[in-house]
Image (tube, rainbow, N blue to C red; front, side, top):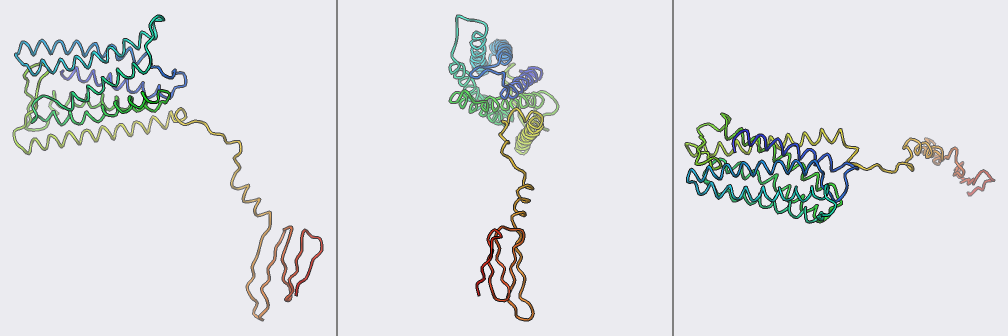
Amino acid sequence: MGLFSMAFAGGSFILIGAWESLSSSSSSNKPRNFSTITLISTFFLSLLFIIDSFLSFFNAISSNDKLGSSLQLQVLAISSLFLMFSLLGLLNFFSKSYSFPYPLLNLILLFAFFEEFLLFHLHLKDSTGIENRYYDLMLVPISICVISTLIELISPDSGIPKLGRGLGLILKGTWFVQMGFSFFTDWIAHNCDLGYKSRGNYTIKCKGHMDSHRGGAIAVLLFNCHLAFLVALICGVFSVFGRNFVGEGNYSNYRSLGAEMQRMENQGRFTLDSDSDDGGIAEIKQEEGDAGLRPENGALEVGINGHGSHSVN
């Protein structure tokens, strides 16, 4: 894959992930089902990956690159799983005689993501190449997709797993675009060069040990920038479409705090006066109340509801 292939694949992942994230909160989206737009987009993207893998496979055979040919067979297997997932899902929409259960489609999608995780985790290319650091960081969005699909398999009625998978696909797409520019343009780390063995088998070698460390550090820094961009994007989109994610509550029994405070003030005011200078007893008054305690000249006068009073010496 070259710059155009990675940029196109990354842009496609971003669009599919954005649609998955937005459709996860849509009330019109049927539960236990995949969106038709997602299935059609996955079908065409998987088909393009298969065509690109065949081109790289035959190029590796002509270049006598056994590692490159075996690597393209793995990519071909992963793309075939995604293609199978999209085809079976589309049959549920356009065919009345065939109906594949939703857990089966989710299981195929889970296997495809897990096999993709193994491909980037093992990365059978040169272990000393800088591109391996980019492949290690690619495991983060793929892990998000694997965990989200697994949760959706357990609780298919929830929209949160689809939202998580959409965000994982967006991060995966932006990182695909970043890898394309980092590998095939002048944005590559200084003192590092890209070397080809075949169309699909390449490695990035740096001149010195410090150059290799700097190249890996740049990769981590770029990935952190992508994460920060995704968080800012989520906050902005959530501020616009937040009503679709948060359910409406029942506020019929709500009473304002000012009314409650005014009610408490109307029930009575108690005052405590300090002892007078001539040694008199403190005077306690209750105003505007139903009952009151009024100590006057050493006698405690009790009045209840305004009906008479009793004095206690």
